[in-house]
Image 1 (cartoon, rainbow, N blue to C red):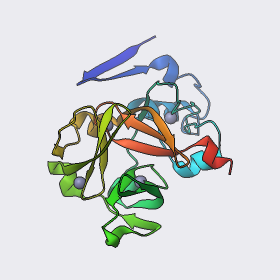
Image 2: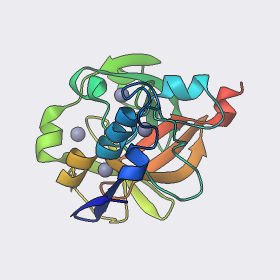
Image 3: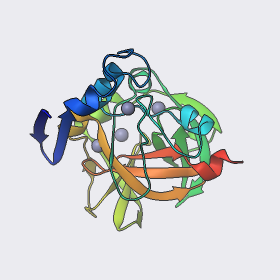
Image 4: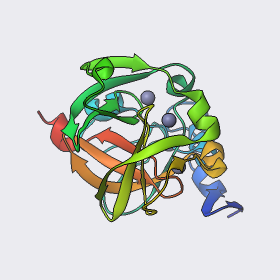
Length: 214
Ligand SMILES: [Zn+2]
Ligand SMILES: [Zn+2]
Ligand SMILES: [Zn+2]
Ligand SMILES: [Zn+2]
């Protein structure tokens, strides 16, 4: 078995030819085909809350793999480019710690806005990424401490869950831009399973089985 290995920061990707070519020579580009699996090995698995809601309880990627386990293991997820270059589609899932909390109905990106900010108290809305924050970092305030970490939110709504307790500006490390996020389960809340990236503290809310059964 040939293994390609690249190490960047704390992230490590292993691409195994056995994994990629497992279904050779059948339908290379089809769902679950070897080309699809190669795409996931290179870019990370694709996430979509609409798919998770339709196919509860186990979360799977189109490549056929079960992903986003809640046992402490990691899933490498790719960027949802339609959200990043288009708009996230947010729905309000609740209020906590003085903030309204929203989740993207597609990629699971969260947002926290202080409840005093009446301009964003909608149930659902679409929102573009604030690209300047992505470039220069998010000017963040502390929301709460939970799961042994500190949660931060920027004025743009972006949140992070980090071990460091006194950050003012939170940046996206290049490893996440290049390789996607390496996420593990944190907790279930308001019908979503929350996962956090080990490299940047980005959280995601994926429609959880309990929510899908209602
Ligand atoms: Zn996949
Ligand atoms: Zn999104
Ligand atoms: Zn920001
Ligand atoms: Zn990350």
